[in-house]
Image 1 (cartoon, rainbow, N blue to C red):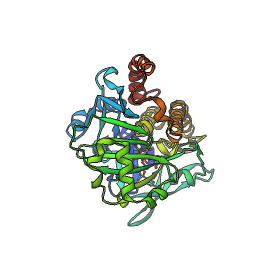
Image 2 (cartoon, rainbow, N blue to C red):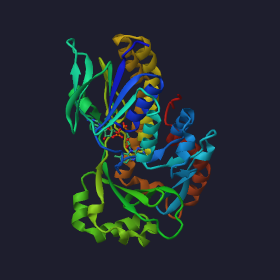
Image 3 (cartoon, rainbow, N blue to C red):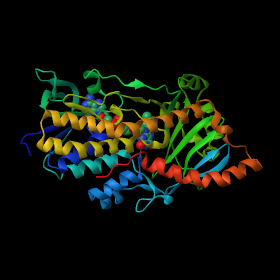
Image 4 (cartoon, rainbow, N blue to C red):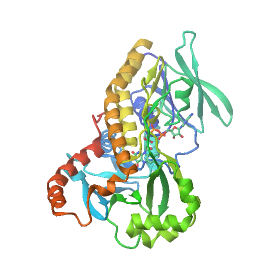
Length: 403
Ligand SMILES: Cc1cc2nc3c(=O)[nH]c(=O)nc-3n(C[C@H](O)[C@H](O)[C@H](O)COP(=O)(O)OP(=O)(O)OC[C@H]3O[C@@H](n4cnc5c(N)ncnc54)[C@H](O)[C@@H]3O)c2cc1C
């Protein structure tokens, strides 16, 4: 290995921490910068997909993962217009990981960070914000300017990786601008206790009110109401009682607990975004995860895609960092984009189609309640096929990566 080859990753999300861990595991010196002091923030995807579980298996940390509270979901239902459909069946996937798992993302990140710290070349710095890059005389990126509570510092690096999410600072200072794909909706994010009735694991409730997702976290339901972009102000004006009523109409079992939403201040507005960079690299720098391509929450695949980017990147970067020069490192960055661009583009197209259906309220017209005889016949044939396809699409996405 060329001594002193060093990578600096901006962003300690799923993409950044996983890449840091994989590089350190291969003996590469890596610094991961996370601007927050901990991973404990709520607005992150909670889904650990079968493909990610396969990677955790390959990393040998499955026992540790299993020891953390989580919820395996072998099947997921969708309720459309009051009709419950067993829409996704992960048990149709190849063994061993035939389920989606829900685990608060901070727990997953803590596990990955702890695994990384077993390697002496892994250096995770919390409370360290990347504010700029440094460049060599020829313009090549050769380091990161970082701000901590002790002041500013520069971390020199042979490669800088931007994994700092959808509002990437590193992407901004590299003057790279992603092309936004119009998304007609936003998400309202809030928690509710489980209603007393046994609620089957249900991913989405599609009704005239739009779509509500209910993510079964161990102690509560994490709810997301998809609303037309810009309509939250109007909902605020209508007030809490109207919001509770809308929610109860959209998800009838929640009527028993909507009163426990005490204020609209407990409802956070999250802007949904889909975008993609035309070029995921520049000499000396690579962008992965949401920094290269913001994923919407549709199908909850963003975390999975971020991790897949990291795995693909580690595979091609390690040989270049071990024995190559600057040109080899840049060629590896080009290869990462070549490998991950198509799977991303395809998934984003599907996400946009889903958004269009929800935003126009067409989702509710998928099926009558009760379904007509014709709809029942179509569902009998189509749903078993869709169940498998959806399991594959959600569980693995396109072109799953292996360690
Ligand atoms: C409402 C909502 C719900 C979602 N739900 C799901 C879901 O259920 N499942 C799913 O798979 N996906 C979901 N997604 C998408 C998912 O959150 C992202 O696709 C995924 O988190 C991307 O991972 P990442 O590592 O690229 O970026 P992020 O997860 O955004 O991580 C970036 C990290 O970089 C840090 N950072 C930012 N700037 C700097 C800086 N300058 N210096 C240092 N650190 C910095 C941030 O603090 C953060 O920790 C959801 C998205 C939204 C908006």
